[in-house]
Amino acid sequence: MQWQQWIMQHEPTIRLSCFFGIFALMAMVEVFAPKRKLTAGRGWRWLNNLALVILNSVVVRLLFPTATVAVVLFTEQHQLGILRKIDFPPGTLVVLSVVLLDLAIYWQHRLFHSIPILWRLHRVHHADPDIDVTTAVRFHTVEIVLSMLIKFALIILLGPPLVAVVIFEVLLNGMAVFNHANVRLPSGLDRVLRKLVVTPDMHRVHHSRIAREHNSNFGFNLSCWDRCFGSYTAQPEKGHTGMSIGLDSFTSTRQTCRLDGMLMIPFRNSETQSR
Image (tube, rainbow, N blue to C red; front, side, top):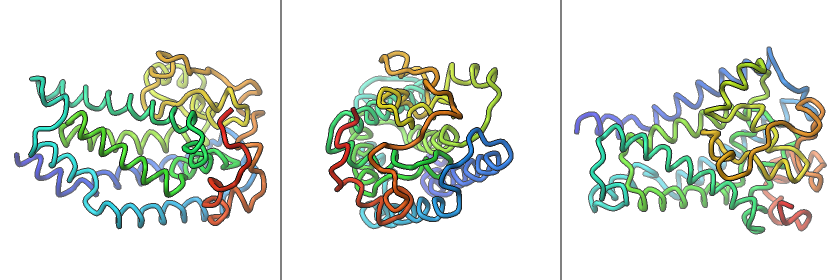
């Protein structure tokens, strides 16, 4: 189909344009309407967090040069996936695919908190002493590679259409930047939005140093999963301006805000479980 060929040709442009547009918008809002005062500043953290993003992008490009599109085409050619066995209307199939992929990412996130070796990797994300738009993309390189492999497996298992996968990736990346942003939303707007999606106030709880709080609010896009599966925490115990961000076991700037320190976090022995 012509529209599918257009998506295949322009998928990177669509995804990156949406991501950078949302990133720039939320970064601007952070400057004029911040929720919290940053404890480690912006310049040094941003330089190193974004350096990790560049490293991850290079590694992913080298390992998976054709990435998601090729996997979707493979499932189409071989008629793989549960969703291909049922005759859904096209619109229903797209919506259902996006919802199921979002549910899978919720459970993937919970697993990275529950399994010690995966938590070692995921600590890089949580060790950031502040939370802002760059935290959204701060993940260890090995976690990024594992996440790509999990995504490929999900696509093969489910067999979603290409347009659904592109929509999901745009939503996932854009919503991650939105809900990690250090922005101050009116409380009424937050209450309305979090009935459907994960808001900055909802996700900020997940970055608390208190274990029961950072082991809650795992959703990235739809907020219903945390309520459905009993992992929802409405507000942090100490309030959004009083809560401490990060992990107690990683407090030095060298460990938490330098590229080499971040890459070494999985190999350090302190706090091997998300207790």
